[in-house]
Length: 321
Image (cartoon, rainbow, N blue to C red; front, side, top):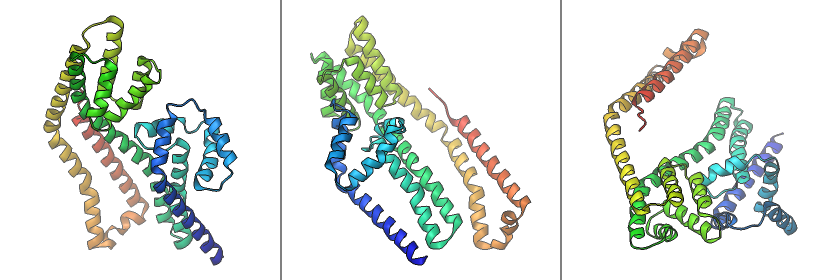
């Protein structure tokens, strides 16, 4: 039995090591393929047939064959959309396989080696929660950076339009002059137009990739101007001014609500901090709280009240503009 456990553990360790090496060494190539895939007419079925003809046992082939199970069942379309918004160069099925491995392998290994159910359960929970949380965090960071750049980009576009540039040329100018992520997204939109996509479709695709309210406002204004006419440079200037004013007001609101946010953080941290101190000073004092039914009920009631209070404080200090 012990030999079997050692064999299973060794196999999983080697597999995860090879998986890490594969993603580390092929990141650039996969990123390039992911970008080119959006502008080619090669269907997924053709790519699958070409991969089957190669008949190799590389890590890419293993992941591809395993991922096809989820592709055929249509389980990765929405996940791939979220990865695009987070600018993570992975296909949906690849991320899903990594997510499953992160959720199952660490907890299983710890249970096999130590037989500690609590630690294994915590690792299972972390493996389930962390991957989508990292994707969501990447999306928010990218969106925040994009919103900070859009006002300056609109200024560049308005000045370029006044100088005689076309709208497509202004997109290319922004892609050259501005940093990522706005440069990358505008360059992608410009390439879509160059490859024959209608401007309306390319701009709508841009709003789908970047879920920004400010960008929606810009795209809506551009599409309306193309239908009814008008001075696009002046429209972009007005939108840029509106966005800057909104950012200024948001900064003032953040300053005014800072005290409430700090109060909520302190109130939320006091109970677990006190429990930690008591556990370090006198663990026996808190044993009835964790070992009796009444103590567990009181603990659950306290945690629930804590969460409700944090939600109420968040609602109070959150002001939409």
